[in-house]
Image 1 (cartoon, rainbow, N blue to C red):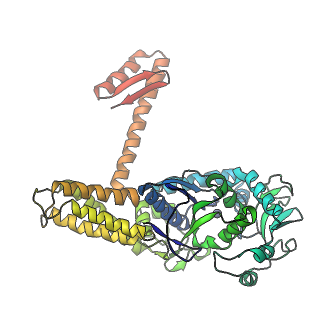
Image 2 (cartoon, rainbow, N blue to C red; image 1 turned 60 degrees about the vertical axis):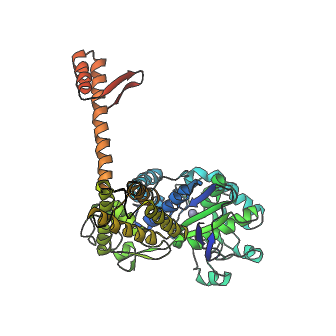
Length: 490
Ligand code: ZN
C-alpha cells in the first residue's frame, strides 16, 4: 500500500484516491521568465517519479502542471512589476514572446531530464475567465472586498470561520507579525490580505477587462481555478516545492474553502529545497546555475558537463523531503554511480545461464518486492537505489562466474531492472539516448532525400527522381507514394 506524507496532516497516510483507479494530481509549474534551474528540476523529477509510480501501480492519472505566464509579481506578493512583463520590457519583446521562449526551453530541459509531459498543461493567461469567476464566488461568499478597482481576500474575516494557516502551521498573529508594510496597503483593510484581482497601472501591459477594473488576476488564483476546471472541485494530490507552502498553497486552500465551502485537495505534497555548496541558490550569491549550464558545464562552479540523467539520478539519490545539496564533487560521484548501474544492466546481456543455478526467478521477485516496499514508503527512492546497487553486485559476480543464474532467473532479473530503472525511476542510459538521436538524424536524412525526389518529380526531372528511388530501394528502403507524399520504411 502506497503511503505518502501529507503536509496538511503532518504524517504519512495511506493513499486512497477519491475515485477508485483514478488519480487527479496538480503540480505548480514554472513562472516562465527565465531559464530552468535546479529549483525547477527537483519538483519536476519528484512528481514525475510519483506520476510514473502511480501509473505503474495501475492508476489512470491525470497530471496537471500549469505554466504561470501572468500575475506573478516580482516579490511573490502583491507588489512590484510582473516578472514576465519586466523581462519583456528589458528585452523589448512582447510578454508572450518571453513566456513562449522560456516555456519551450523549459520543455526541452524537462524532456532531457526524462520527465514525462503532464496530461494537461494549462496557461494562466488562457484562464482569465475562470479566475474572474473564482474571484466573483469569493466576493459573493463575503470573503473578499473591492478596493479601488482591486479585489482582496479578507483574511481576518476568513480566519473567524476557518483556519488560515493550517497548511503552514501558522496562526494569524504570526502572519501579521511576519508581513511587511507593502504596496497596496492603503487599499487593503489588513496587511495580511492578498490580492485576488489587481487593477493595472497605466504602464502595465498584461491586462484584461473584469467587473472591477482592467487588470490581472492575483498569482494564487490560477492554480485554484485551473485545478478545479481540470480535476474537479475535489481532487487527490497537490504538489510543489516547500517554498510554495506559504503563502501560495495556504492561499489556495483559503480560496477553495471560501468559494466552494470546503477544501479541494486531499493530499498536499512538498519537495524540500535545493542548496548549492551548502548555500541557498541565488543570483546575488553567484551560485545560480541553470540546467543548460549543468548540461554544458559552462559555469565557474563546475569542472565538467553533467548529463541530464546524472542530475536526475542525483535528485533521486536523496529522499524528496530532505534538503539536497548540489556540488561539483557530489555530481561527479553520482555520474559514476549511474555509469555503474548501466554497465551492470549491459552485463545482463552477456551472462551465461545454467539450468541448475543458485539464483532463480525468486531473486528478481524479491528485488521487485523490496523496491516496491521502498516506493510505497513515501517514495523512498534512495532505498530503491541501494537495492539496485545490491543487484549490480550480484550481476558482476554472475559476470565473473562467481555465482550462477537460471535462464528464467536471468530473464526475470533483466525485466525487473528495466521496470525499476527505466519505467519507475525514469533513468535511461546516455548511450541509448545517443542512439535515439542518431535515429532521429537518420530519419531526417531520408526524409530530406524524399523531399529532393519530390522536387525533381515536380520539375519532371525523372532521372534524378528514379535514381533516388532506386538507390534507396537497393539499400533496403521501401518507398510508397501516397497523395500526401512519399513514405518510407526499412
Ligand atoms: Zn500554484
